Image (cartoon, rainbow, N blue to C red; front, side, top):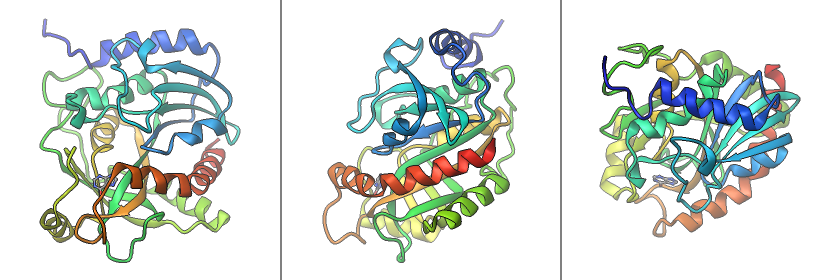
Length: 280
Ligand code: HPA
């Protein structure tokens, strides 16, 4: 017998059972699981027939603590397709293990999700990026110095998951097509994840640019790693909420991040809704 992780497969099944009990038939065969980033939770208001299960009611979930994160699992339909959305996520900068940051994805998997959409707020590093740009995530840099899979191998996980295509090209093509149909500009690039909670120094942003990063944030990567270990397909979008440190003409603040997400929310929501509609 090996000790089971508090954020492993069996814990995910316990959480999934509670959520399933609360949601009933709502989103019983989800076409996609959606992780909503800081300030992007408004997408939940477009979910038809929504049933919300507060994070506080889910075994194994701590309460979300960051302003801009409501903290609920929401079942319903979006663009006609059954979805499960996580409004809120667990960040490592809150003191959480990487395994906990990825745990909600295990729970989504236990609920039948096989396609995951992740979103986040991020600082723009590529010089042509402007606050309010949306960026399709083509690849990422895990600079968090942690990996959610460290430890005992969970049932269903790969021990050494391939990461040569973490973001699914066919799903990405669908997002680009949905963006084109709606005439929403969609950039493409690489997301660098740092631990936070400090924003970067200008020297760190120059380093990240040298490493090939187009945007920088403090989330998403643990979730994507868990999803890939479970064989899920992943797509993601970063919302460029500010120019990164040293590029921005003013100091960075969470208030600016949330302000920008408010401005782009309707574009973001329309894009995701259209894309999900095409998945069914
Ligand atoms: N850096 C890190 N995380 C972020 C940023 C940033 O500039 N903007 C929003 N999240």
